[in-house]
Length: 354
Image (tube, rainbow, N blue to C red; front, side, top):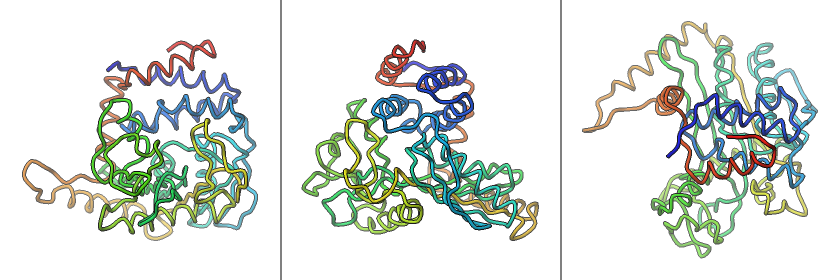
């Protein structure tokens, strides 16, 4: 599997975003947001999706130079209209609104409409860490998930991320889909020709499936929790949909526009674009930040040192991604041959060489 230096991929991706009309600052921000996924080992949401964003732009479904604006606000809340822009740009800007409000009044909560896929949720939540804040990020997504007992696909993978600052210990960063696996994991399995683990997907008839093409063939992804607990993942995914879209005026449920350009959005939308939800909580609105972070260090150390089953050790949310990022910054980011070919193809359109 070929590997590419982070700086090499950054320069390539930034030039592609500029080629579709992104202002320089937006292209840089979109690239940083997108490649955060590759660095952290979330390959399903990284540069492999660049081609998808370009196709959406070609289909007229992404505004490369949006005027992101607050359309309604109180001292601690806001609704942000993304103007059809890249979620990779809209998301960080909306999160900054939440951070600014938290700086003023202790907490900030922002619901977003008229956006698109925003990369990994963890990136946005982590923006709060530098301000001694707890960050929260959610987004709804293309309807590929069947609620418990449903044959219909009504929800997206609808991730939730929470980032909590620590002191001497690395920060706590939870970033998870509300499904057993994200759709990008199916795409990776398809590229590699591998079967899916049990519990990831069902057929169009509602039967369990390990076929990586099950969702493509009319089936659905399954909520987190498996055969006996999927109602929990369904409930979490529903909360994300409501906070991200019903609250902001974005599309929700089966009306969320698909990420793939060859599928058309609903002819009768109930809102505008995709929806996100962001939160920022200033730690010292609750207790002194240094005191809190010292106790977070103690919490993290206690859990990490827990007695573990043979051959395993207890991880803190964010550990695997942090280790992967450190490794990939030194040794490069591995890309599947199929992804490299896709990137070279899109680069050729704009005269950008990988």
